[in-house]
Image (cartoon, rainbow, N blue to C red; front, top):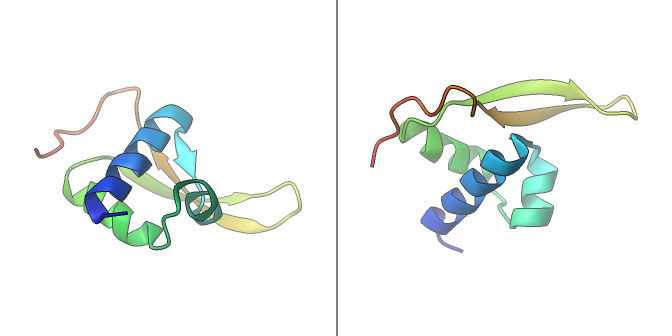
Amino acid sequence: MSKQTQCAALLKYLKRWHSITPMAALNWLKIYRLASRVYDLRQQGFPIKTVMVTTSGGMVVRSLMVTISGGYSNPRP
């Protein structure tokens, strides 16, 4: 899958579910370098936040979230 295809798949997923973990990106989207795709989307102006969340099992994992409510902050074409 190309970089552009991965970015499009990630953005579509974030628009629907609002957050994703690295394991979910690997399992569902087959994106191995999630940080790189997030960097690409941030460079295009998409407001993606990184937060740490605690799972029900007590593990602390990184989760990526996109802010949808106010729209996107002027994404570049």
